[in-house]
Length: 353
Image (tube, rainbow, N blue to C red):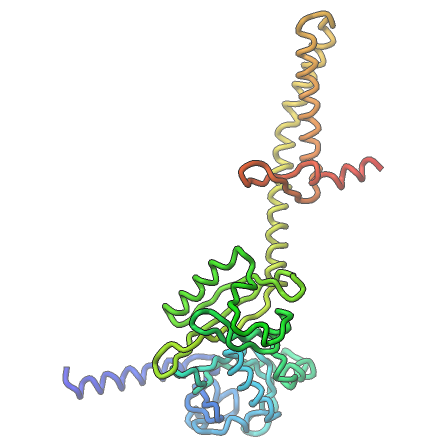
């Protein structure tokens, strides 16, 4: 293929990509950190009241904000945390009409870890929110980011931590630097941390959930997103942004327990129902045998033992049918089974009042 044909093919491909992005209903953009729009699609132009996406190229982004300080806050958060997700911002159209949008954007870094672009998407939410609800989310202090930000060296030792990390660990900065995060992890997660680091070295980024002990010795679950930062083309350090997802994990566990309990409840009810009828028949037959059998008969003690065991079986099926909560107990070889006594305890106590 000639150079001319290659050039033409490249131009066709570029045009097709441009047509594709322009056809998307989502408002897409790429801006420099300094605030110039270097790319956007027609949906963004429509959202902001411009005739064409070309009218926005090199347009100063700051002019789109109702509060110009918000731009600096978003850039600061994106640099510190790697991006923003569904953050409500107050914007204005070309004719100054105020609108509210949710911005999701990611910091685009060069090999030296310097932010060169902010790539993102805008979604209008003007009709969905009360503007007063979101003012403080954007104008709040930039130093109090909800994410922990930790910089590791290539051995996994902390070389920089932000105030949120210090607060979570309950230790000052000088007590954290030089330590490996694995020292604060739950023992079961230490191998996972090594795998996490290996993934970062292999593909340049990694994501996982790790469990640590905070300053109050409570277990906290952290969602960790990390990426390898290079300097002059060589791996230099690891930047890790973490978010406390403890509450989410607890909710998921609670939901799983609820689903498990529902399964136990349905199974127990089914088992109790299936056993009740044959046990009733057996009990009646044993009672008839005992009434006809002389106590001096050598079989009498054996039938009495059978009768007593059947009564125990009836008690168990009765408790199975009255299980109101899920309780487990250790069995053998690390296996846990339903503790029927405790699971039906609250109902038994209620019945015995």
